[in-house]
Length: 135
Image: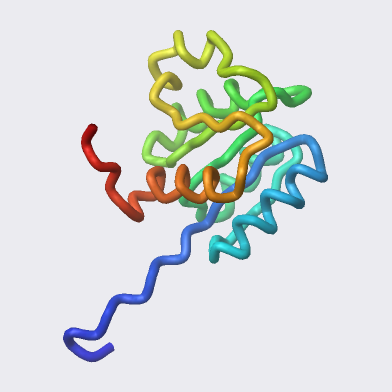
């Protein structure tokens, strides 16, 4: 690259975790169209397996899933990979457990269904692609 040439944008990798295949497909397409590399997991345990072997920048997980739910997944990620960025989503209101757990209370949260722009804005903040202006 020549001096003074613009730096190409970084391609971020998102691990999308949701037990509903249709949600995974729709959100994955949104992310891929926006230039993200996407890994898919149908469960918390599958997500942990992927995290052990694949480089991931952000985990975007549904909260309500059978087996290991998204809150338990986020706790495990915070314990094992404390530097890894995590965002949560749900078709329900933000659960009280999310607000009361100090490790999880600062995690970004999206209520499904959401517009693609809301998702992209959240990921830009999570990945540091742009700064959020002070109020």
